[in-house]
Image (cartoon, rainbow, N blue to C red; front, side, top):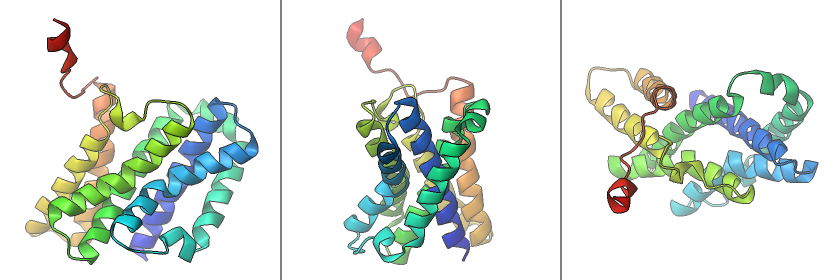
Length: 205
């Protein structure tokens, strides 16, 4: 039940971020739904295909389509209120990657993958819905932008989880702590302008 709740919360967070991006691009209602849908389930779909878990989850569990539809309707109706909140899109996107990273890691653990593979699976789950969203909206995906700490936060959170479970630390607390580490890492990186090294500086000089 705990993991299901996390999955639903992540789906809602990513669906809302997809709606906000789509509405910024002034897409029609169908376009808004498609962008929200692929943002919410794109990473999970790729994850399930990679591990052979087919039909993929949203095809087996209609509740995901229901939740995404509800999130789209809510976001369209209250878009003005959502946009009044400071950096709403960034916040929902950050919450989404924290939740989905750990869901991907849990899927990897369930089939006995090595920790490094679990972290890769978690990063794919968290990031590739946003990649598809940005490509559909004619944007360079956030994960590929030099100034954004995105996948790096997911990887750091995944490593933190495996370190914490080695300690006398309850598994559920380690799970929640890793989610918070991912969210806080990205928030702090943006607040203080922390980014990966600029390899182009040497080339240009």
